[in-house]
Length: 106
Image 1 (cartoon, helix red, strand yellow):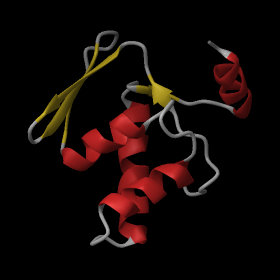
Image 2 (cartoon, rainbow, N blue to C red):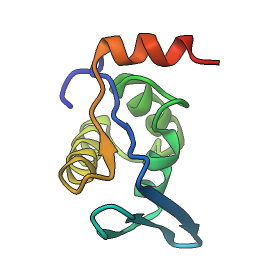
Image 3 (cartoon, rainbow, N blue to C red):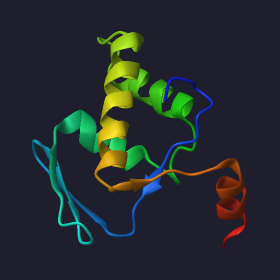
Image 4 (cartoon, rainbow, N blue to C red):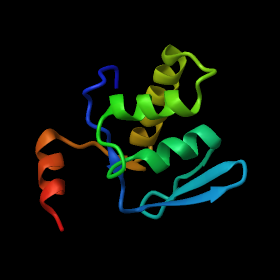
C-alpha cells in the first residue's frame, strides 16, 4: 500500500466489527479470527470502501484527523494495519474492475 493510487480492500463479508470506547473488535465468522483494534485502527476500518476508495483518500482523511502525527507515520501505520487485515482475511483485495462494478450497483 505504498502508492496513494492503490485501491483499498473492502471488508470481508465474514467480518463483524463492533466499536468500543477504546477502539473496536473485529471477528471473522469464517476463520474465527478475533482482532482487537485501537481508536486509529477502528477509524481506518470505518473509512474502508465504500466511504473511501483509494489509499491516498484514506491517508488524507487521517492526516486531517490526526494533524499531530507525521504523514510518514500515518502511511506506515495504515499500511501495516491493512496488511494485517488482509493476512487475517478480514478484508478482501480489490482490482480496478471491482471498483467499476461496485459503482454500478444500486
